[in-house]
Length: 246
Image 1: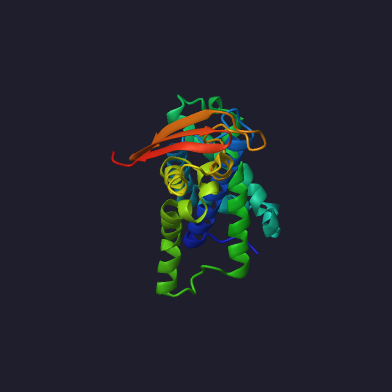
Image 2: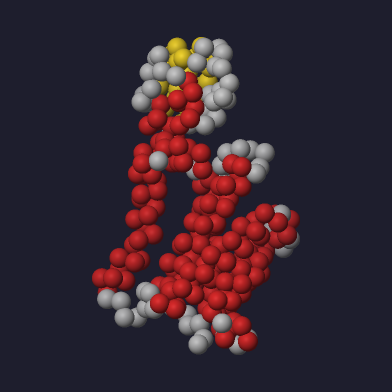
């Protein structure tokens, strides 16, 4: 049975794939890069989101049409391989006007990023096709709820997630999400608390290794509308100032 193009299925599957791609990016930056934390958070979300949206409505129909003309169309389980491979060509085409027609100069990491998005998209799209999810039998209300579900997820991610899981928000996200998590956690501590407890919730904030005795140290920084100064000695916070008057 051939793969059929469905705009709603393509949109939802691509949104899931876009976020899966970000998780790949965040895990790499935190655990496998020299940075140790997420950088360029907003640009990464914006440009990968824009490219994913264009792909869902422009390139996916072409990929499906081409896929259905091959012998691979006999097995829907092979569709993710096709979308993963196609993602490399799509990224190259989208990057042409931004790289003076030399897209490969951005490095293999971003083509791997695109490959993750392509494969995850293929997996979920094939699943939606198999079970008939988000097909034409959905009611108008059901379709509306499906369409706004990505927006609801983003509201949760940016507004609630930093408070629901501040450690994950601080470690694997950036900009406003990370800053909200920092401000929330710092607000729970006071002079006399253990610096290792703070460090366990905001890893790397003070530079204090959790398994080592805390000597004398300090840390300071700022976020969107607030700044903080921390001093500690012998494992205990001796000064903690949070200024949110900016």
